Image 1 (cartoon, rainbow, N blue to C red):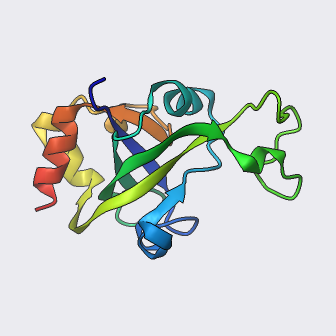
Image 2: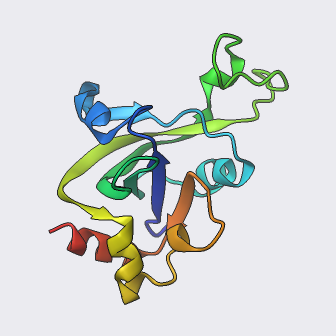
Length: 155
């Protein structure tokens, strides 16, 4: 299968690229996704070896700050079973989980983050899902060309 490309949004106050950089092996699980379309992307479409743009949201500036690789394909998100977790879901059972997560590993933290303003100003990125009106997904696909253009802009 061909490699796919994704963008994951995270608020730096919840989990930043610096947090990922400090994680053992620069690796973590991507838990807490509670949108069905984002879940479906992770569960049904993501594969080991896919690349992920890491985007800092709800901060100033909004920016892609690095990229990662999917190192473990979708498996049940353990937080859905934990009544003490803000991500607990009463409907979820071990036999029939509702929510899934993947593991990612940091490949590169950008020295020069690529801001949302720069993305919007780049004609090559005019169709990028991130900048489409009303798109609030925390996990979304990007094209290979969009991914490569973001990498180029980070240089």
